Length: 191
Image (cartoon, rainbow, N blue to C red; front, side, top):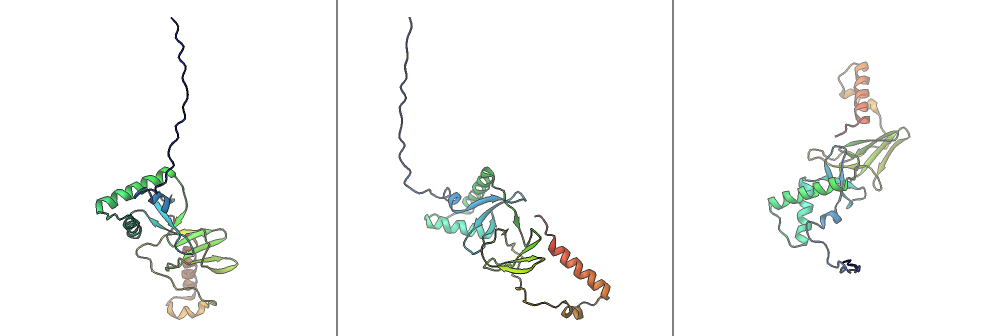
């Protein structure tokens, strides 16, 4: 006996998602998560003219996470915050967006970019053409460590000879010291 089974395809319409994501799932929309060249995960923040990053698990990012949780009327315990950081780390690893992240000095084409370390996230571009202060629109990502203080902005004109009285060195060694300092600044460490 032969049976003929026919199946009919039915289309099920899912309701549109109208409610916004709840905490902690809304963090993935509000924080752009990346992996740095050091394998750590970072959140890109755009509340300054130059974008900057905060490491996942850092005190400053934890404060941002608590602020977002309070908007959803959630009070985070230490355990919940640790779980949230684990969630963000896992999400950053799963989306696998790699970007270069620097602590104070970054190599750029024909020069370096220095993070001034101020609240405005000002950057200083140094190339053979000269020095330029970048107040907005830079694509270089920096994070501030807890021990880095803001730098003094560069002067319009400089004169190295004004530094010489403070260097108790033979003129040859003075030049070597200045060469070493500029070399060190021009070759940033990869974190």
